[in-house]
Length: 136
Image (tube, rainbow, N blue to C red):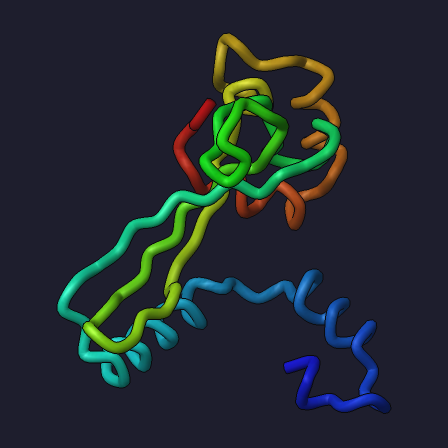
Protein backbone atom coordinates (compact mmCIF):
# COMPACT_ATOMS: atom_id res chain seq x y z
CA UNK A 1 0.00 0.00 0.00
CA UNK A 2 2.79 2.40 0.86
CA UNK A 3 4.47 1.75 -2.51
CA UNK A 4 1.26 2.69 -4.31
CA UNK A 5 1.26 6.04 -2.51
CA UNK A 6 4.47 6.97 -4.33
CA UNK A 7 7.03 9.51 -3.20
CA UNK A 8 4.42 12.20 -2.53
CA UNK A 9 2.06 9.93 -0.57
CA UNK A 10 1.40 10.48 3.10
CA UNK A 11 2.96 7.32 4.56
CA UNK A 12 2.64 8.60 8.11
CA UNK A 13 -1.14 8.95 7.68
CA UNK A 14 -1.31 5.42 6.26
CA UNK A 15 0.70 4.02 9.18
CA UNK A 16 -1.53 5.88 11.64
CA UNK A 17 -4.67 4.49 9.97
CA UNK A 18 -3.38 0.91 10.03
CA UNK A 19 -2.19 0.96 13.64
CA UNK A 20 -5.14 2.82 15.17
CA UNK A 21 -8.08 1.59 13.11
CA UNK A 22 -10.97 0.83 15.52
CA UNK A 23 -12.44 -1.86 13.27
CA UNK A 24 -12.30 -5.57 14.03
CA UNK A 25 -9.77 -7.24 11.70
CA UNK A 26 -11.61 -10.60 11.81
CA UNK A 27 -13.81 -9.86 8.80
CA UNK A 28 -10.82 -8.61 6.79
CA UNK A 29 -8.89 -11.78 7.61
CA UNK A 30 -11.90 -13.94 6.67
CA UNK A 31 -12.22 -12.24 3.27
CA UNK A 32 -8.47 -12.60 2.76
CA UNK A 33 -8.72 -16.32 3.53
CA UNK A 34 -11.57 -16.86 1.03
CA UNK A 35 -9.89 -14.87 -1.74
CA UNK A 36 -6.52 -16.52 -1.13
CA UNK A 37 -8.03 -20.01 -1.18
CA UNK A 38 -9.74 -19.25 -4.49
CA UNK A 39 -6.53 -17.88 -6.03
CA UNK A 40 -4.10 -20.50 -4.69
CA UNK A 41 -6.19 -23.67 -4.65
CA UNK A 42 -4.39 -24.91 -1.53
CA UNK A 43 -3.41 -28.53 -1.11
CA UNK A 44 -1.90 -28.00 2.35
CA UNK A 45 -2.08 -25.69 5.37
CA UNK A 46 1.24 -24.57 6.82
CA UNK A 47 1.47 -23.50 10.46
CA UNK A 48 4.72 -21.61 10.89
CA UNK A 49 6.27 -20.19 14.04
CA UNK A 50 8.66 -17.28 13.74
CA UNK A 51 10.80 -15.31 16.15
CA UNK A 52 11.05 -11.54 15.94
CA UNK A 53 14.27 -10.48 17.67
CA UNK A 54 14.10 -7.58 20.14
CA UNK A 55 16.93 -5.81 21.98
CA UNK A 56 15.06 -5.24 25.24
CA UNK A 57 12.02 -6.69 26.98
CA UNK A 58 9.83 -3.58 27.23
CA UNK A 59 7.79 -4.23 24.06
CA UNK A 60 4.52 -6.15 24.25
CA UNK A 61 4.81 -9.95 23.99
CA UNK A 62 8.61 -10.01 24.39
CA UNK A 63 10.24 -12.67 26.55
CA UNK A 64 13.55 -14.49 26.77
CA UNK A 65 13.07 -17.73 24.84
CA UNK A 66 14.59 -19.95 22.18
CA UNK A 67 14.02 -18.87 18.60
CA UNK A 68 15.24 -20.56 15.45
CA UNK A 69 15.61 -17.11 13.92
CA UNK A 70 18.66 -16.52 16.13
CA UNK A 71 19.44 -20.17 16.84
CA UNK A 72 19.65 -19.44 20.56
CA UNK A 73 17.78 -18.18 23.62
CA UNK A 74 17.28 -14.43 23.29
CA UNK A 75 14.71 -11.66 23.78
CA UNK A 76 12.11 -11.98 21.06
CA UNK A 77 8.45 -12.08 20.16
CA UNK A 78 7.15 -15.44 19.01
CA UNK A 79 4.48 -15.45 16.36
CA UNK A 80 2.52 -18.11 14.50
CA UNK A 81 1.09 -17.80 11.00
CA UNK A 82 -1.39 -19.91 9.06
CA UNK A 83 -0.68 -20.23 5.34
CA UNK A 84 -2.66 -22.13 2.72
CA UNK A 85 -0.22 -23.51 0.14
CA UNK A 86 -0.12 -25.25 -3.20
CA UNK A 87 2.82 -26.43 -5.29
CA UNK A 88 3.23 -22.93 -6.72
CA UNK A 89 2.07 -20.41 -4.10
CA UNK A 90 1.38 -19.70 -0.44
CA UNK A 91 0.14 -16.74 1.58
CA UNK A 92 -0.27 -15.91 5.27
CA UNK A 93 -3.98 -15.54 6.02
CA UNK A 94 -3.87 -15.36 9.81
CA UNK A 95 -1.22 -14.66 12.42
CA UNK A 96 -0.91 -14.16 16.17
CA UNK A 97 1.74 -13.32 18.73
CA UNK A 98 2.25 -15.53 21.79
CA UNK A 99 1.56 -13.91 25.14
CA UNK A 100 4.45 -14.81 27.46
CA UNK A 101 3.43 -16.04 30.91
CA UNK A 102 5.39 -13.14 32.43
CA UNK A 103 2.87 -10.72 30.83
CA UNK A 104 -0.32 -12.78 31.29
CA UNK A 105 -2.36 -11.49 34.28
CA UNK A 106 -3.95 -14.95 34.66
CA UNK A 107 -0.59 -16.70 35.04
CA UNK A 108 0.98 -17.35 38.46
CA UNK A 109 4.34 -16.59 36.77
CA UNK A 110 3.25 -13.08 35.79
CA UNK A 111 5.62 -10.22 36.52
CA UNK A 112 3.42 -7.51 38.12
CA UNK A 113 5.49 -4.69 36.58
CA UNK A 114 5.16 -6.14 33.06
CA UNK A 115 1.43 -6.77 33.49
CA UNK A 116 0.91 -3.19 34.71
CA UNK A 117 2.93 -1.81 31.78
CA UNK A 118 0.80 -3.91 29.39
CA UNK A 119 -2.43 -2.61 30.94
CA UNK A 120 -1.25 1.01 30.68
CA UNK A 121 -0.51 0.45 26.98
CA UNK A 122 -4.19 0.44 26.05
CA UNK A 123 -6.36 -2.15 24.34
CA UNK A 124 -4.88 -1.61 20.87
CA UNK A 125 -1.39 -2.60 22.03
CA UNK A 126 -2.45 -5.64 23.99
CA UNK A 127 -4.99 -6.85 21.43
CA UNK A 128 -2.76 -9.12 19.32
CA UNK A 129 -1.17 -10.74 22.36
CA UNK A 130 -4.41 -11.18 24.25
CA UNK A 131 -5.83 -13.38 21.47
CA UNK A 132 -3.30 -16.20 21.90
CA UNK A 133 -2.92 -18.87 24.55
CA UNK A 134 0.08 -18.35 26.81
CA UNK A 135 3.42 -19.30 25.39
CA UNK A 136 6.69 -18.96 27.33
